[in-house]
Image (cartoon, rainbow, N blue to C red; front, side, top):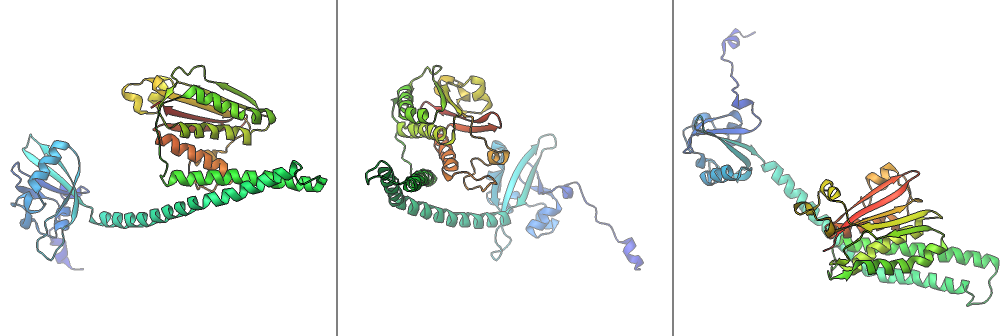
Length: 375
């Protein structure tokens, strides 16, 4: 054992050295009177190389940045001034506070050069991935017409054969043709929704916001689906009596698509069950809790609340937690068109600066609640 080591002076860790960031202590004129160990590490210097000098000798535009941060009370990214031309400047995140009692300014900095480098790599990878997604969406959208046209032909001819255009059918032929017709229509629906989802993801939807009568639109959609609802013996109720504002200044075709998508869900996934669509204005408290942009005025008449309920459709808790995660693969198998439809609705509604929620429970069914602004 070397006894001389026992008599060596122990290095005292000051309060500044215990802080997680580098710290400059300055006089009001920017002169450095103290630093901690992390500053010495960042600048690879000794204390006497820094103390007594001015802050602007170590940070680009030091005095100006100090004043800006003190005025705005927020962090800034700055560059260090290297000691020689061979060295590169470091990227620093800087905050400042002033102690008027002791006439001192405290500058906290941390080196974020490595984080910036990592962020650059992430951004480059993101741009590559985004380009691939865009090219994929463009390709699929260009192919959608041919694919859907072929399916329409299959369902159309199978329907014509079932109607007797080719003569009488045997029992087995009729059975197989019904399967072909049903499956081709289901596949057409799923692919149509999938292509529509790709379109919303590619941001190629052109919105034409013009005034239209919302109640007239609702009535026309009700008439279109009346026969399908009667054929499936669905108990359907529609109530828009609480809707006092008829004029809507959104894209009429997109709003119609949203409402028709809701009705499609009713028809396709309800089997002798109950469906309801209630339309009115959201309560002010609802807008407050949902943090809508209406918070400045809180005029519920500027918004429309839609509540669509279907008793025959129930989502598990896992499905609900990932309901708007487009490509999430859950344990429950669902038709592609259903998941795509919900995500299309989410994209359109949020583009209108509205919002949508899904609630589902056994013995209750599923409730789709969404809010749209009227303009």
